[in-house]
Amino acid sequence: MSARLQRLRAELPAHGLDGVIISKPENRRYFSGFTGSAGMLWISGCDAKLLTDFRYIEQATAQAPGYEIRRHGSSIYAALDEVIKTGKHVRVGFESDAVTVDIFQQLCKSVPDVQFTSLKLDHLRQQKDEAELACIREAVRIADKAFTQVLTYIHSGMREYDVAVELEYIMRKLGSEKPAFDTIVASGKRGALPHGQPSDKVLSAGDMITMDFGAVYQGYHSDMTRTVVLGKASARQKEIYETVLAAQLTGVASVRPGRSGKEVDAQSRRVIEQAGFGDYFGHGLGHSVGLVIHEEPRLSPYSESILRENTVVTVEPGIYIPDWGGVRIEDMVVVTPAGCEILTASSKQLIELDV
Figure 1 (cartoon, rainbow, N blue to C red):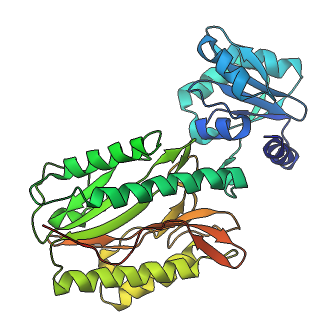
Figure 2 (cartoon, rainbow, N blue to C red; figure 1 turned 45 degrees about the vertical axis):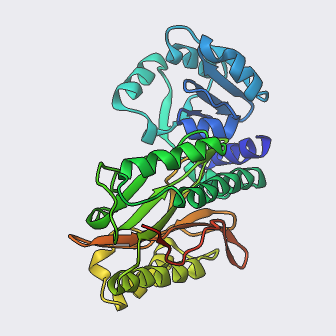
């Protein structure tokens, strides 16, 4: 954690700050190792304190050895006031994107005579270190293995709910802490819903089935999507699937350090547009993944963010046609000096399942 703290502390002078309050769970964990659900960090040039309540003192002491652990009473803000005033700090950063107006008002009331400045820290998590990449690789491995196993379970007559439950059960058995997000299973015409939640729709021969799911390992997420067909694929299904696959492969090949999110998105999107399906691909190409399932940078037509080495992103183009269905194919990749490494191992060839 010391290297992470050094990078954080290096940000403070550039923003004219004496210290920063960290309240986002993912940033609290990233900079301290503390996984509890309640607490704040106070970090200045010489201080590193973790404020939490009685429930987490033992846990915080074990997980954040580089921090002074402070137990607060009824108000964490009063404890913050004591910590900040002791060091005579007057210019303090806080994560405005994680603080409600009510909490900010409480903060200002409890810690007077301090100038609060909005500070965003998420960019410090963009480039993953080797320990983070190891966790992400394991989360990806779990999802890959679950996909292989669930294919033997899917059959005509079962519901989308059943597929989702089985996927999540398998991932748990393989070591996932929880689903990385609400599992998506959308079949037949429901495949036109990019984020179609599982329903009681019964699977039938000829259905395409889109499954978007992920695992969590030591806090780090994975995210993959595969679309399969129950029975033999029609010519139309094959055409659309091959178009999405070509776009996905182009997107992966376009990922490299120094490129912006919109440059990578444009390369993949062009494949779908040239095939005549541009109006049916309405979301961005991908997003970064880590302690949170959707992180920056994004791969989208609007993203100016630059990809850097050891950034992990998804590449997930799709085609969604109302009253017909849809196809999405998604891999996770990590940016390397020469391009990227594909982390997701599952086949991307169209799989035709026995009815």
